[in-house]
Amino acid sequence: MAESKVTADCIVDLLDDFWSGIKERFRQVHTILLNADNGPECHSRRTQFMKRICEFALKHNIKVKLCYYPPYHSKYNPVERVWGGLEQHWNADIMDTRMTVFRFVQSFTWAKKKATVCFWNKTYETGKKLTAKNMKKLETTIDRLDDTIGKWFIDICPEKIQNKLFSG
Image 1 (tube, rainbow, N blue to C red):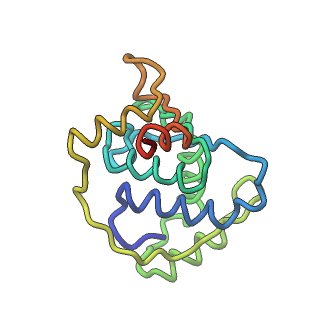
Image 2 (cartoon, rainbow, N blue to C red; image 1 turned 135 degrees about the vertical axis):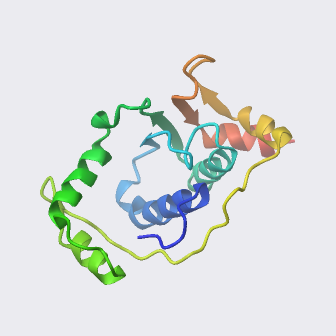
């Protein structure tokens, strides 16, 4: 549970914390597929998000595939179904304190799995973005499917980032 505004930095920090905690169990995994909803914080043209997700891929030496759901297609997004289940679970009770929210989420089960809950107390600055020059350089490390639907399917390869940005 994040107390700060959810920003691109917040999303990637939470992903980094999660992956750091489980990566030993998944040593054989070399690619992570992230399904995203194209929200403003994690849109593929959001410069700060793309910068941070590239840093994540490089830090963990893991390929990241971003796959975005098209607008108005939340019914296909499994996270939206989980949110619907959580809303039914708390059944219009008032979420007036941190502990109330924490207890409801902690007692929630979806597809026979218990939720994992943590408090995230870092405060994030909004409005951070790369300059056009820096984003153009970063774009050389990102593989978009094509010009038409390239905002929907993106591959981020740590070797390409290393070679394009940090070699010679």
